[in-house]
Length: 95
Figure 1 (cartoon, one colour):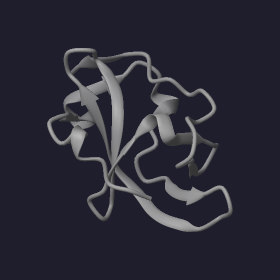
Figure 2 (tube, one colour):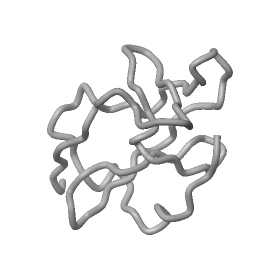
Figure 3 (tube, helix red, strand yellow):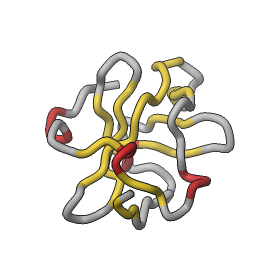
Figure 4 (cartoon, one colour):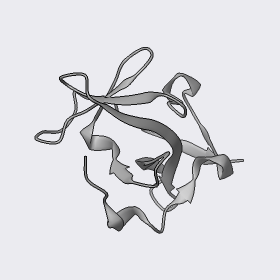
Protein backbone atom coordinates (compact mmCIF):
# COMPACT_ATOMS: atom_id res chain seq x y z
CA UNK A 1 0.00 0.00 0.00
CA UNK A 2 1.57 3.29 -1.04
CA UNK A 3 1.33 6.82 0.34
CA UNK A 4 -0.06 9.43 -2.08
CA UNK A 5 1.30 12.96 -1.40
CA UNK A 6 -1.04 14.71 -3.84
CA UNK A 7 -3.77 14.72 -1.15
CA UNK A 8 -1.83 16.65 1.50
CA UNK A 9 -3.86 19.86 1.01
CA UNK A 10 -7.33 18.35 1.46
CA UNK A 11 -9.67 19.19 4.38
CA UNK A 12 -10.52 16.78 7.17
CA UNK A 13 -14.06 15.37 7.04
CA UNK A 14 -14.63 16.79 10.56
CA UNK A 15 -15.17 20.16 8.85
CA UNK A 16 -17.77 18.61 6.52
CA UNK A 17 -20.79 16.32 6.63
CA UNK A 18 -21.36 13.37 4.33
CA UNK A 19 -24.71 13.51 2.57
CA UNK A 20 -24.90 9.73 3.02
CA UNK A 21 -23.73 8.97 6.58
CA UNK A 22 -23.58 5.23 5.71
CA UNK A 23 -20.42 6.05 3.74
CA UNK A 24 -18.52 7.10 6.89
CA UNK A 25 -15.68 4.56 6.95
CA UNK A 26 -13.54 6.17 9.66
CA UNK A 27 -12.31 3.42 11.96
CA UNK A 28 -12.76 0.69 9.35
CA UNK A 29 -9.87 -1.76 8.93
CA UNK A 30 -8.22 -1.79 5.49
CA UNK A 31 -7.14 -5.10 3.96
CA UNK A 32 -5.72 -6.36 0.70
CA UNK A 33 -7.83 -8.62 -1.49
CA UNK A 34 -5.92 -11.54 0.04
CA UNK A 35 -6.61 -10.44 3.63
CA UNK A 36 -3.35 -8.67 4.53
CA UNK A 37 -4.05 -5.99 7.17
CA UNK A 38 -2.87 -2.46 6.33
CA UNK A 39 -4.29 -0.57 9.32
CA UNK A 40 -7.38 1.53 9.95
CA UNK A 41 -8.88 4.61 8.36
CA UNK A 42 -8.31 7.58 10.65
CA UNK A 43 -9.90 10.33 8.57
CA UNK A 44 -11.57 11.03 5.25
CA UNK A 45 -10.22 13.94 3.22
CA UNK A 46 -12.38 16.36 1.25
CA UNK A 47 -11.63 18.46 -1.83
CA UNK A 48 -13.35 21.65 -0.69
CA UNK A 49 -13.79 22.97 -4.23
CA UNK A 50 -15.38 19.81 -5.61
CA UNK A 51 -17.10 18.97 -2.28
CA UNK A 52 -16.16 15.30 -2.62
CA UNK A 53 -14.14 12.88 -0.53
CA UNK A 54 -11.00 12.11 -2.55
CA UNK A 55 -8.74 10.29 -0.09
CA UNK A 56 -8.42 8.74 3.35
CA UNK A 57 -5.72 9.11 5.97
CA UNK A 58 -4.62 5.84 7.52
CA UNK A 59 -3.74 5.53 11.22
CA UNK A 60 -0.04 5.41 10.25
CA UNK A 61 -0.32 8.70 8.28
CA UNK A 62 -0.45 7.26 4.75
CA UNK A 63 -2.84 8.99 2.36
CA UNK A 64 -4.76 6.74 -0.04
CA UNK A 65 -7.06 7.68 -2.93
CA UNK A 66 -10.65 6.49 -2.51
CA UNK A 67 -10.62 5.18 -6.08
CA UNK A 68 -8.48 2.30 -4.76
CA UNK A 69 -10.96 1.39 -2.01
CA UNK A 70 -13.76 -1.14 -2.21
CA UNK A 71 -16.06 -0.55 0.77
CA UNK A 72 -17.66 -3.54 2.47
CA UNK A 73 -20.08 -3.56 5.42
CA UNK A 74 -17.37 -3.65 8.12
CA UNK A 75 -14.02 -3.23 6.34
CA UNK A 76 -12.39 -1.78 3.23
CA UNK A 77 -10.44 -3.62 0.53
CA UNK A 78 -7.45 -1.78 -0.97
CA UNK A 79 -6.96 -2.53 -4.68
CA UNK A 80 -3.55 -1.30 -5.82
CA UNK A 81 -3.81 -2.54 -9.40
CA UNK A 82 -7.23 -1.20 -10.37
CA UNK A 83 -9.97 1.20 -9.38
CA UNK A 84 -12.38 -0.10 -6.78
CA UNK A 85 -15.82 -1.40 -7.56
CA UNK A 86 -17.77 1.80 -7.61
CA UNK A 87 -18.50 3.50 -4.30
CA UNK A 88 -18.58 7.18 -5.09
CA UNK A 89 -18.67 9.92 -2.49
CA UNK A 90 -20.88 12.19 -4.50
CA UNK A 91 -21.36 15.05 -2.08
CA UNK A 92 -20.39 16.56 1.23
CA UNK A 93 -21.50 19.86 2.68
CA UNK A 94 -19.89 22.27 5.09
CA UNK A 95 -20.93 21.96 8.72
